Image (cartoon, rainbow, N blue to C red; front, side):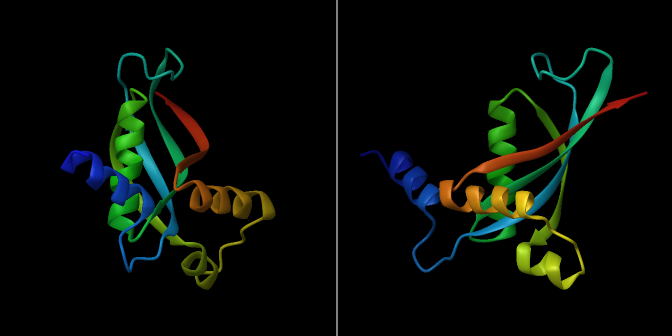
Length: 119
């Protein structure tokens, strides 16, 4: 196995000693050919759940996946983990908790909401 494939596998499974958590991220998107956004949209905002051993890893994973999907992430804002959001007083319904659980179980990036922007 090449070192890059080995590193990829370690990144996806989590680092030894690191506990995966799910981070809620808000991503601002620009336009890119083939991005799937409506023709007249100037960009979009999306909320996603991304797993990682820390927020930086969760952001890197989300940006990488969005770029693979021909999207143009411009800015990512971390909202926090489930526990952090609850401590801030956020109300999190069962559907949202289910998406967070899925992101953790699948070690995935789950896009929960996409809002196109129009001028």
